[in-house]
Amino acid sequence: MLSFDMPMPIAVEGTSPSFPRVRVEPGADGMDLRLVYAARFGSGDTGIGTATGRPWTAGAIVSSAIVNSARPESGPLLLPVDALSPRDGFPDGSLLFDRLLAGPSSPRYVFIADMVEATDSAVVDAVNVDGESYSVAVAHALRPYRYWFMSEQQDDGETTHRLVTKRAHDAAAQALNITLPGGCPAQGDDLAPWVTPDGRLLFFQAPYSTRGVCADATALRSFYVELGEDGLPVNDAPATMLLSGVAPSDPVMTPSLSPDGCTLYFAASIDSGPQSIYAAARQ
Image (cartoon, rainbow, N blue to C red; front, side, top):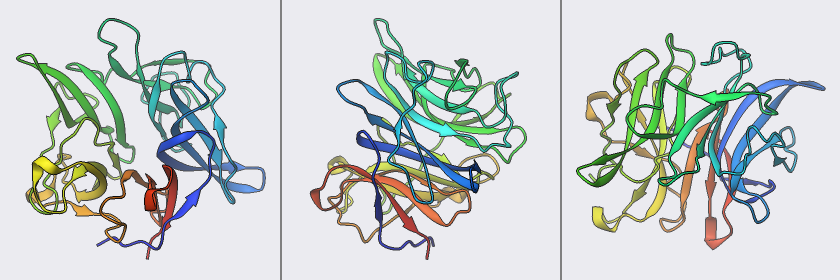
């Protein structure tokens, strides 16, 4: 069981921030923390911001037009500084994110940039399969890398959203069937996955009903579940809720852990306040 102390807000630029993801990197006075997140900046679309820690700066939108284009971007994931880039020729510690493209159907795809203040980017072929892909997570300690991401597909005229997993060389992705506390399935447009480097724990968000009435599941809450070597839940065990002490009506979204596993980062609207990024120390 993972338990955490009282959440503390992190003030960053932008409104409705989400998808906080943190890595360690060299700083002016030793090792520092780097946060990337998604937010709405000014009157524009959702974009990607960044801040540094110890203590946290206020953050700012990433200035690179390669990362923040004229289209909406979200789901940032900054790989560790020593993690190989999934893109040949890109430096270690690349930035992954998704972008809503222009066009009749406005498809979403996962991109990779060479760095935060990027000079180059490309689509990630390993995860852009079978329709639209977005909100990627990477087990970067595995060889080959294993990915988890949201997949949007059209089935007999119906739009479906599934959380799937695959390794870089796998021909097809496998869908995850996750059961929430109370028995309802984890489903929704975006489960916002994040995984530990070894791929053993998956953190995610899902609509949840405290009464176990699946049709009434509306409030987004955060959970974690143990995974096997195949990237799927172990023995179909149900997920465990994170921060169960937060009021049931308060959304708790887009969770992730710090690189040392000692801090939970997430977005939330607590006590009817504005949506903010929070940090909670592990007990």
